Length: 357
Ligand code: PHE
Image 1 (cartoon, rainbow, N blue to C red):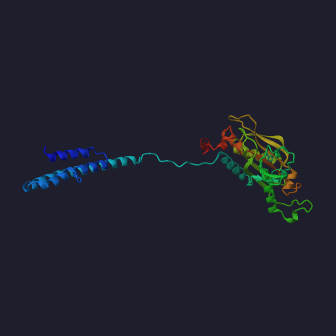
Image 2 (spheres, rainbow, N blue to C red):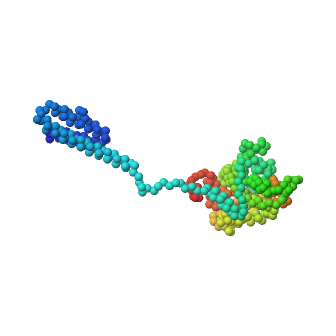
């Protein structure tokens, strides 16, 4: 092996072990750089006799070209390897299933409220909405609730700023204030001055019946497996000239049977007391089948609207009469789906909520 062949071989070996472009360029400098081995041989040619210069020069050139070819091969190989790594890293597996967008759904209590609205809507009830921050007047006084009634106690109710010291505003403890708010609006719309009695200011003319439900959030200082400080109620009110307790029984029975899709559901109107109804009754229901069969379950308070409340609506109780009820949509939802802890509805755990989608 002559000296040129040896140089070419050692260049190839040096290029072969270079693992990165920078290593390769360093190796290149050792052979083709300013003081590289080939360059040094070229410089050495000056000392050769003229007749040797040609053959020697040609031989060095051949060696140089061989080294350059090896260098380019290695450069290409390193570039290919790098590209290969990059392609692998950025590989897209088109066979993977895509990421889905989370599918939303209505909250179980919202589903119940929609169902309540649909059923009462089919019976000709309007739906009314009102404020959750109430005045003492609408939440208590207008509803014939006396100053010393336990429902007005600090322990039962969230009082907040606003209103007067004697009668501060509060988070409504029930949806019953909507009885007054809605009826007053209704009466205002249909009353004529000539029908308002100058003595008592009450309306005794004729008007379309008041038939309304008012679902919404309500608040009490209460928290356990069946009570939450925020809960839902749905008020019902039907006032006309001839609306009696029998209409309440019919309407509420029909509602419950439709809601629970159970024709043999039994209802019991258990005598009770509310300041704003007289007589008053708690409504209990009893399933004939299923895990709750045979148990009485309380679902609502109800009664015939008290004459004082009719008066606070602006109506003459000599002409107008009706019934009201207030039920618990949270409770209805628990019964319908067999949920035993009310707090699950308000914890916001997606594993629970997604079951109702
Ligand atoms: N407001 C009563 C409660 O919260 C329920 C009720 C409404 C009772 C209407 C009678 C009439 O307990």
